[in-house]
Length: 460
Image 1 (cartoon, rainbow, N blue to C red):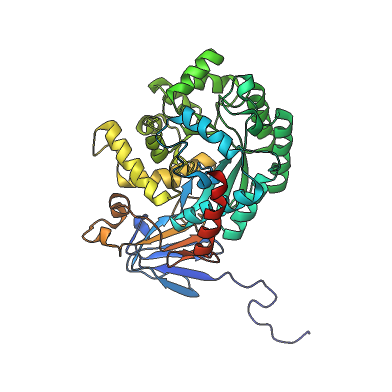
Image 2 (cartoon, rainbow, N blue to C red; image 1 turned 90 degrees about the horizontal axis):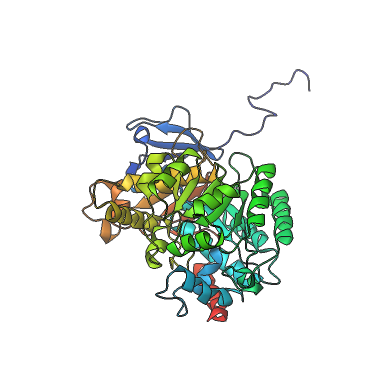
């Protein structure tokens, strides 16, 4: 009413709450020794050591026991494979015989078991400090048409960011490929479902919680037609491309025998050699091929534990980085890693690179962290993730050094990698706590373990 006094802010939306993560034990950004302020899902302020925030805060969290990292980003996984860890049919085999042993078993996958597999994988990842996960789901037995939709639902329920790739296989045994006929689809069905998923789920905005990428599985399970049409579809709808490439010498021999060229030449032939693409594994590239990947800004997801379990070889991480190619980190499928633990994967990455180069100084703990943060963010085309910086998304992993393994550690950040951290104490995604005191909010871990374990009995 005219003449009545107005109060400041009346009629305006309420100011976003400001949370100060105060005085961490250590933090990856030297400019934030006094902590960071989170507001409206983003990092609003870096607080120098010994200082207070420039503007008032609504809440303070004492981080003096915590080492603060950007949330870790997993750029390659197969959630469904949590159901077949340490499987007797596949133990102690290399990739091709490992796959041919497991394809018939994976063909039993149904919607209920996939849902539990995705829930368990995403929960494991969150508890390990992962805030964004990419999954490569390429297996669509009869009745599993909505596999990616199921994964979207599970990710939203847990509050974790995801890039879910609509994987595909249309080259079966009868056509000269590796997978059996009953786990592949025809190209038209695949492409139609890709368009459906992009229209329904793909969020191109900064800070998106769900994005869709397109991912024919590998040269030995996808036709040239599917590869080319998928690249065109990704260009039209502005989404990313993903596939396995350069994982084994068997793959090299397959490409040379089938296509008359090496895998990277094949990738160029089908129109995939560009910044929209990131590859899983990238082990068997020559120095010149690493340079080509760098020139074209093709990303590579390093999967150290899986590469070791399957004896696939050493990824040329240093050569790829020197060439300017984005390099991220992934746990790969839980049937080849046998875990979904991102913080543990950092230690594997460090050890394998030092073995490959035979130099202790060639790859550091902080470089391992960079693979799982800024490197992975670059692979996914998400510059707002993986950083502690003003304006970046407030995705954070907080670790304590309370376990016996850390006693006597003098560099808290390096200790997470060198002393073998296994889980985060707290995890924040988009400014919201998702893990507190080491446990995911809203998840009965014991019940999940029991239900998932029961589902896994179908895959014996």
